[in-house]
Image 1 (cartoon, rainbow, N blue to C red):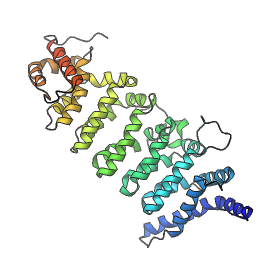
Image 2 (image 1 turned 30 degrees about the vertical axis):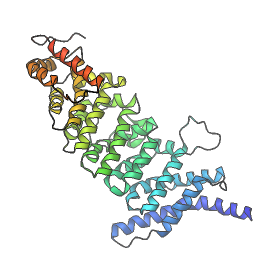
Image 3 (image 1 turned 60 degrees about the vertical axis):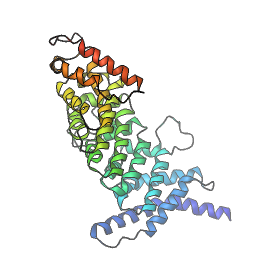
Image 4 (image 1 turned 120 degrees about the horizontal axis):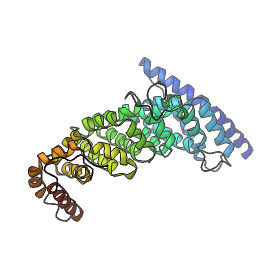
Length: 370
């Protein structure tokens, strides 16, 4: 009887993607029309697909390959990403598992260094799948499963580039696939990456926390991609970062955004970004206001950004003017700053170093020698 079961499995692997597409399209249509949504059949199909991909020992590699290629051919990844928030809770969990397995699948004999089949297809021909997964943050129902899939996919620099360089259908946008990206073209701010600022700042706590985790991955994981992106889009990025995140009304958003800013500036791969940031007198003013915040952890995270300005041996004239003009106030303020951190030796040493640097500033600004 096992040979009959095997034939059923093989046939099922071929049929499942088409069945799933039909059920998802019906779900989407009923949802749009306000009609009662029936999800039982979709749940069964998604559950079967998950079982095939998880391979309990009765599934051949050929059957898994057939299922993955069928999912690609039916454009099912895109349909699932678009409709993720409409799918019931248990089926959303199955969908997350399906995405994860499909994006990791490599046919037998493939090089472990090559991109998985589905991921390669999405990166080169159907980048909208990744963009729609990002838009999962528009809905609390889809935020967590979409975010989990995204962070797994973001191990690929090309996948991260698809998200960061989305600029609608403009020339040079990732809309046309990773090979068509123009990394030297400044962004318009209309792409999906720029929506992370509002997802982090204006969403519910759970959605905002997940969105921030993904946002941080985009900005820190790939040491060639992010610095170049930040350099080309410096004014647009930091304009939004400072106004929306660093000055957020949300304590959690404000604190974690200041901390991430410090990490970005102190990362060696971002040296040119750091020097441009600390040249700005306006950025210094924002940072000095953080030192006066009512909340000590905001003050503490702000201190780690402030020290980058003061420790810079090539301070701009604008930065020197502000520090010299406020020298006496700063020295008095810093001498009592976060006095209760008596066990934090590194902080105490850094605070004393900054006090010394400010004391030794010249009477008037001197153009930096670089």
